[in-house]
Image 1 (cartoon, rainbow, N blue to C red):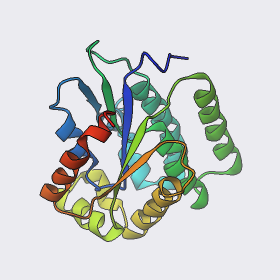
Image 2 (cartoon, rainbow, N blue to C red):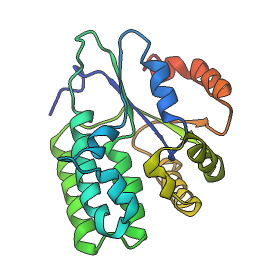
Image 3 (cartoon, one colour):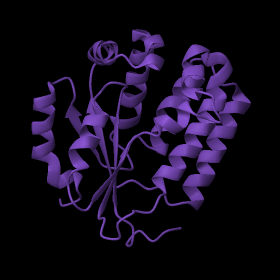
Length: 217
């Protein structure tokens, strides 16, 4: 496994769909010494010419298992990527392998979209990755927002694949984040930010917490 001392400080930005993760990624992408990694959405939109993201939202029962396997692989590639600049001290990811395992996979299991064997395979694969590859995070920034707020944002931004997302799904996904990140015994430090606020207010929160997010505190 990669030495903990040699790798950059790793931060994952977590939150519901529409919580403002991309805004935070954009904010920090302009700071020297930081490399940011957005969600590999374009990779999911073109799997040998097929839009796997759209297929999944169109027919969750049929495509979710394949999608989750591919997401786990694509996130592993991103989270273990070496910085392009040798002077990089911080890597900031839009969501993480941990998020996929403890939010989306759990949500799929509870919703009945993953059978027992499907769930077991994804879990065993994740456990192997965790035990054999350094995917450790140093800080999680949780953009905490209500499902109703992000639902309105999703409708406003109008991404084609997201038209099929329901408020009920966002409520379930919100609860998955709460169950994962709001427990007292979290292995990774969690910084909770109020993402119900306006864009300017969120940026002000970023400025106030910048040193901690960058591993300076």
